[in-house]
Image (cartoon, rainbow, N blue to C red; front, side, top):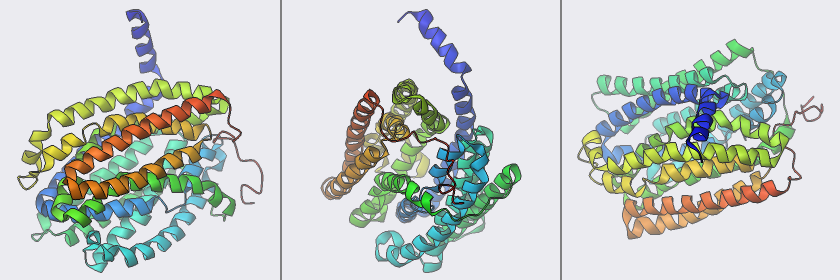
Length: 438
C-alpha cells in the first residue's frame, strides 16, 4: 500500500467521531488505570498474598453473579435507546427495578453458598457488605454508565467510571492511614462505602441530565435480556473463575500471586476497553444496513485494537521482573505468572471486537456457545493445570483457550456476513405497545 494512502487513512481516522469518543473514554480509562493501580498496590502490600488472594477470589465470584443482576437490562437499554432516545426514561426505570429485585435474590444465594468455600473466609457482615456493594450498587453504576453509552455522551460515561476509581483509591488510602489493623474485613467495609457513594452519585447524575426514570413492569424485556444476561455471566465466569479455583486447590497465597498478575494483565487492556466501548453502539448501526457493513467496520477496528493491546503484552512481558519491587517480595511468583499471561491482552482484543460483530448481526447465540464451551474447557483445564503446574500453568492454559476463541469468533463472523441473518438488527426501534409494556 502506498505511503500516501496510509497517511490519508490515518488522518481520516484521527478526525472520526469514533477516534474522538475513544480519546475521551481513554482519558477516563487512563485515570481509572492510575486509580486502580494505586488502590491495588496499597491493598496488596497491606494484605499480603494470602489476604489479597482471599479478597480477589471473593470479588471474582461476585463479579460473575453481578452479570445476572438486572437480567441484561443494560444491554436492552442500549439496543433500544441507541435508535430512539425517547425510550430512555422507560428503559432506565425498567432497569433499576430489575436490578433491585434480582440483586436481592442473588445476594441471598451468595450469602448461603460462598461461606462454603475458601473465598468466603470472611465474617458474615463483611461478606454481606461486599455482596451488596457489587450486586446492587455496582450494577446501578453500570446501568447509569450504559445510559451515556447509548446516548453517546462519552464525557459523562468517563466521569462515572473515573469517579468510581477515584473513590476506590481514596478508600484504600483512608483504610491504610486510619486502620492500624488492616485486614480483609476492614478493607471490605471501606470497599463497600466507596461503591455506595459511586452508585448513588451516578444515579444522581443521570436523573439530573435526563429526569427521573419511568418505572413500569415490562416482562417481555426479561426474555429479550436473557441472552445478554447469560452471555455476560458466562464471559465473566470465563474471566474470573480461575481465581477461586486457584485459591481452592493451591491456597490463598498462590491465589494472591495469580490474582495480582491477572490484575496487571487487566490494566494492560485499558486502551482496548476504551476503544470497544466507544465502538459498541456503532456496530449495531452498521448492522442495520447489512451484516457486511458491520463486519467491515469490525475489521477496521480490530487492527487498531490488536496493535494497542499488543503493546501492552510486550510491556508486560519485558517488565515482569520488576513487579515484585512494586508489590513486595512476598509476590515472588509474580514474574513467571505475568509472562505466562502476557499475550492475554492481545488475544482479548481480537476476540472482543469479533464477538461484538457477532452480536450486532444477530448471532448472539453463537457467541454464547463459544463462551460456554470455553468456560467448560477453562474450568476443567484450570483444575488440572493448577494441580500439575500451579498458577503458571493456569496462565498458559488461559491464553491458549482465548487464542482458539479468537479464531472461532472471526470465522463465524465471516460466515454470518455471507448471508443476512433472519434475526433483526439489534437496534431496531420498539414501536409496538405490547413490547413497550403498555
